[in-house]
Length: 188
Image (cartoon, rainbow, N blue to C red; front, side):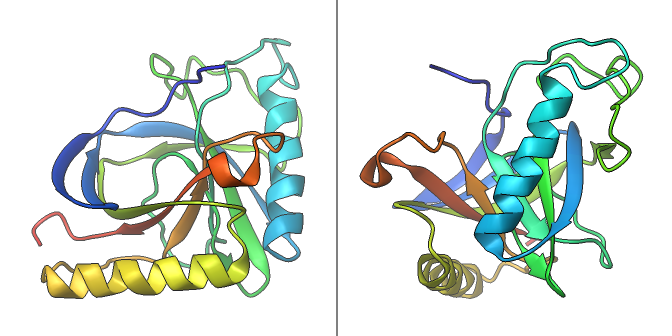
């Protein structure tokens, strides 16, 4: 089952590492507590409720990938798709990127006040792809490798790392696509 992914321009690729440039996007997001897995499950359910008709128009919105999990606000995060996960003080920002063609004004208002619609500015990200269940040790290892890639290319990280998950839970663990995203300066 193919789902829409946000389009990007690839400006560098070296093995599993990439530098991507994303246009402005619209996201639905929610902040939840718990450990990484608890948070992504709770956040996913809330956001799925919104796109499956939990909105004032009772309108369904197509599912996209990935699901992003990032640190909860307290600091500005210029994030685009997928669903990404990062932690700050036990709180996680879980995000779905809305399908292309929507604007803030054309999306239905969420029924749940915890779900927020956000306009995301264009962004540049260093990304590393990996497979598996995205356990904490995998995320830490891949993040460290991505940070080494960023330093070696003299790029400048401008925000925290986020976890992007692309596959539904019934996908066999060895076939799951995950990525770590780090926002980087547009000028290097």
